Length: 216
Image 1: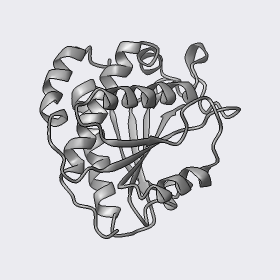
Image 2 (image 1 turned 60 degrees about the vertical axis):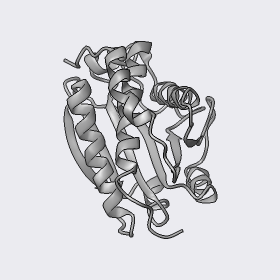
Image 3 (image 1 turned 60 degrees about the horizontal axis):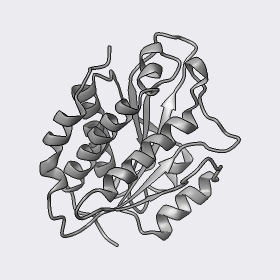
């Protein structure tokens, strides 16, 4: 079972990271998976991947806007629209992003399948080590803080990773299985979304400060 974590406790633990004066602000592009006619995975009780990741992304924006010194964040979509994969990666390049994070949820014919997977590009670049490090940290934080099982950091040739890794660190998060009753129910609770966003956000801020972008 996923952990029953208090939002208030997590927020207090995160205050140190949110309060930091980040002299070299990082620019983050959140890729909101699927959208429009592409629902992505459809889980228990008809929950749709495109809606879950949009809720998570909007919660990230809300959290960021509440910070005294907001970070530089852009979404690849802000509503239920379909954006091509190439346009998503072109946006990150045009914005000169320091980090590209693609958000997704999983599905399986096996209802017992569960847990988080984090993908990085098979292609190698000077940002590959940073991307791989961040992937391991995100997976570990989601496991320790929320109880999501870790299914491993994996290398894949996904277009959004392949086309971004040459100019910034990029990862793709598969945030649990909508075909799993426990994880599907988790995403149908607004409080769960808020808690998940806090964990992801703290992990991103903490680990972005652990490396300096190489090159322009």
